[in-house]
Length: 131
Image (cartoon, rainbow, N blue to C red; front, side, top):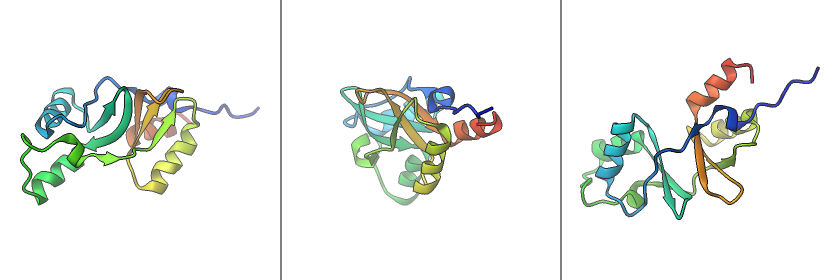
């Protein structure tokens, strides 16, 4: 019997939080803290244009003298995030995350609108589930 191909959509988290690039970094930090998330998609018109991680915020405070009230999310975000569709095979996406040395992929629909996020932790869950 052939092994069933497991998809990103089975393991992703819905994108319930995002932020606009013009918002202040302090708003992003508060949103991440309040919601217990480490990855925050940056969107314009529903489409992801970047991502900001807790690690990015830590680096800004540890290494740079950045005013979180005056600096925008667009200043600190990673542009052109890795995006996939929910129908993509989880094993292929996990390999690409590893190849790119990144820890998340943004999940988009056919029109490019943000619908979810897949993190390293989700890939570990997929591996544990036998994907």
